[in-house]
Image (tube, rainbow, N blue to C red; front, side, top):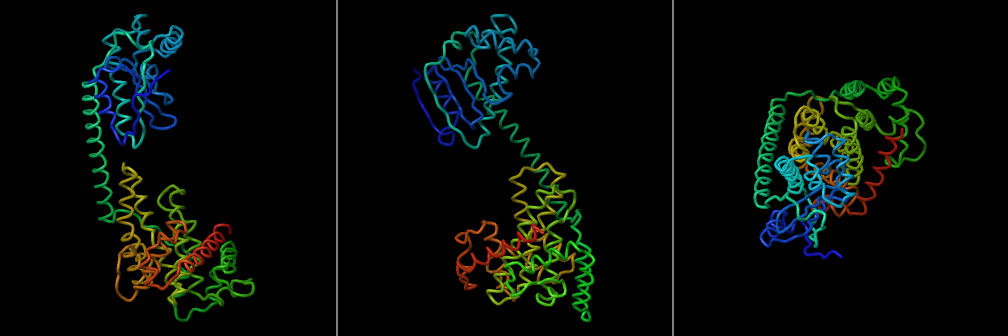
Length: 430
């Protein structure tokens, strides 16, 4: 029966320290490193030397590594694995005894394989190590033995080299991406044509409800979706809205304009960006827009301005993702860049689309704390909406200072958020 000599998390003790302890005390044991449920690395040690090792990850065994390196043909390697198991000896011993590989060649191949296993452990974010004894007789007494200290030194050197190379590549990609953003070397998303037409109407003092209705009635699918939203719990009016004219009269031209913008943006495409990534940003924007508008009503602020500000809040992320497609940049750095730069790019989009300067400013500074000026309360409303949507309805995650400044209770915020989600689902289902 195996005896557990030691067990620890990799976060508590590194594999480097563990192997040095085994080497120093000349221990014969089995070291099992569990990185995931499907990925275990097993090292066999004899008198402190590493005599065998393998990975249980699919496609990563020693036999498969020998085939990939060209040291063995696939048929020979498969037969060697089967025969070694039948004989009750390790694969390395079988290869030497059958003269399929020389000791120098096998030692070098095994060393390279072991370095790759150690690199996997070095880069793992989590995992555990279990040391048991005795080691199976099948791996003991062979000619293949690797010195732990030298192997660790080589693994650390290789890890450092790869880390430096990766850092250089990331830095180059990040520098290129930042330069393109700074120089505005990118294409901003285009405002849907029907939204442009409606914007022109809103800026025309002589435009009427009938003018807006005529533009919208050129798109029958859009009419259906507008009516669904107008009859949603979010607007909560009495009586059924059954025509686009009635919807405009009841909700007003600006509110209909916001609804149309939300509907059109929810199905927007941009710059060859994968639709899944783009859709996640647009869906979040629409939820924030409805939530911000509902909160603005509670605070006796302009719900239409809040809706538009919330809707355009994160559109800058689409630009960053589009530019990043051409750069080799890891997800962590990309997330950091999206957080730090999306607001200024969102303001740039609002400027291109000819939205008021108040909207541009709102978007540009929507993460700023204690933002002063005339739009202070709208700014706070946007922040509350942004926080509760991103935290999936957890009011306890919203900044309590914001709630206090707006005199909003958690119950009211919860109710507004639930109603906003219902309207979002109406648009998505239409």
